Image 1 (tube, rainbow, N blue to C red):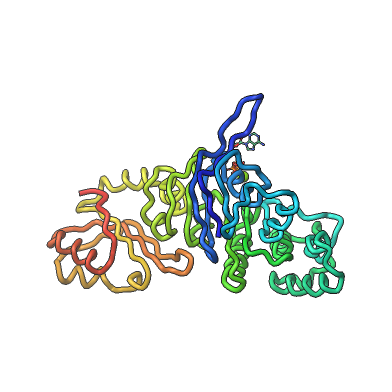
Image 2 (cartoon, rainbow, N blue to C red; image 1 turned 180 degrees about the vertical axis):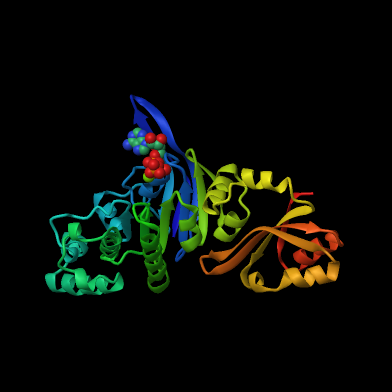
Length: 335
Ligand SMILES: Nc1ncnc2c1ncn2[C@@H]1O[C@H](COP(=O)(O)OP(=O)(O)OP(=O)(O)O)[C@@H](O)[C@H]1O
Ligand SMILES: [Mg+2]
């Protein structure tokens, strides 16, 4: 759907070219929710804004549905932008227009007849659950409602791709969850490809299929969220994951000093998460467990569990083998 080929960007600062994004290869598949995570200044906005050419690439190629869009003229660019919707952290609504009029604005620009605009706006407000608010002004809405208007407006021209630049960063956790739920629904029901950027691993975990990690303008890790979230490799990724788990690994390891046995992290994924495995392995191998920390949650629709346990006594090699044989990932944290 979207293909970056050695795409890069530098800005001219005081007459010098300063690199914001190193040459980068990336493919976003049709129908997926692709997340990009990075700290402030990592180059996330630069990257996402190159997809609809709000930001001009400095070099490389960008293909959208197989078409090279790096060299489009003004008319080509307008057509491209009708195929790509975008939502923003601060909503960017027009304060002097009502909700309905904000949503219909892209259609007005495209010269759509009034009756068609009205019908489409009604349908879009239904999709985002704002039928009752059509005649309000942005100042009369909550943050979550404003972002729903932003989403409806982004969908007005029937795009195939939706770009989200920190779309939930200005919202409280509960509103964030409901806006993310709406994005998932749009992805599922309309088959829209979504690219979203965020600095929160929790946003990635809830809605994304795959994730790329940006660090100082460089792509440092990429893969399915289940892999990257449960087995992060790069230090930056590890930090994002441990922040979202609310576990300070340093403190945790300090705590282990007073605990005996072999300390392992067990990761269960999918249906295995709900197997009564600990008990049966304990009976087979005579190993006792001391559970030090644990979490059962979901990565998008996939349940997972992570337990840090100390193994005491018994046949520990056999216990580790039994876990691995049952599809549980075992990582030894301390012998
Ligand atoms: N118009 C510009 N001119 C010069 N430098 C810029 C410009 N826009 C961005 N940069 C620089 O490019 C780098 C990447 O910026 P970008 O806005 O893409 O980061 P970001 O990951 O979106 O950060 P944030 O999370 O704070 O939004 C930063 O070092 C920034 O200072
Ligand atoms: Mg940004």
